[in-house]
Image 1 (cartoon, one colour):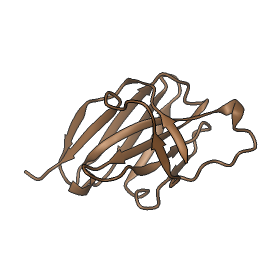
Image 2 (cartoon, one colour):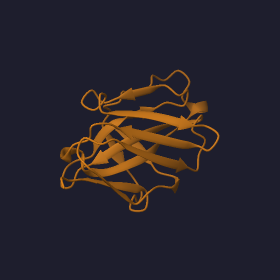
Image 3 (cartoon, rainbow, N blue to C red):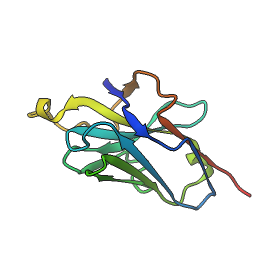
Image 4 (spheres, helix red, strand yellow):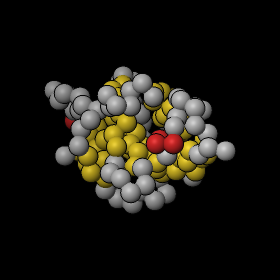
Length: 139
């Protein structure tokens, strides 16, 4: 199991997007994005956490096979901001979206393989103020 925790400075509280539209969420973090892996995870109401993918400390990415055509990540190393972009979102994409940090630092990960994007995970700590709720609906 992979343990993650969040250190977030700014994260939007909620957003509403219509089906078929795109979405951008910026997550400004309190750690160096060049020293830690970052991850995006989502949780639809009443369902289990769902892995979206990783952004590694070197800037490369890995995505869940199920979601790789829908989401992409980028980052700004100057402001330590990780960005999630979604396209052609549908009502089934309504969820709470989490930005999280891998607990292993760059100096401790030499010789380790990068975790797969579909790695099982647990979240520890309170995430209530570190999330973004995305709601998609038809008008």
